[in-house]
Length: 137
Image (cartoon, rainbow, N blue to C red; front, top):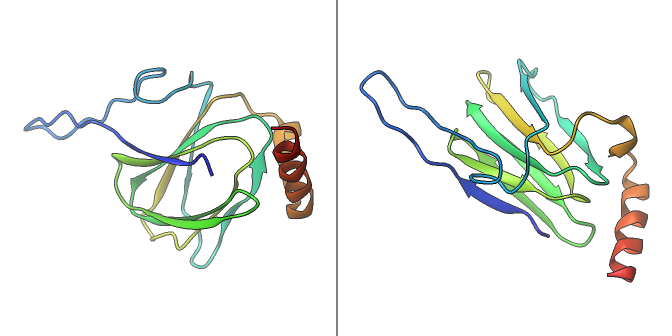
């Protein structure tokens, strides 16, 4: 599947904790975009897509949520509930995020700027791209 978990370091201090994230050091790509998802209504799901080229690190900056991943042949669900534990998602991995706690803040660090053309929003199209990619690999 190519998905990996990432454990970030914590700098402990009497004033609070700090979690640094550095490109090419803590994560294997240059950060080109950062965004947050929060105030997700109860029962709502996010994601429902894959990317043609983009790599992402997904973290629970606060609260918790689950991430269901699919590489076209295997599926696995992860539960994120710590700002130091994240999921590194390569290209061509379908993701669905769900079961957001009321206080959840999903922090996403992306390898590319936003491009609508990079999104695969149709699961059938995703399966075809994965099949094609696997046949030439």
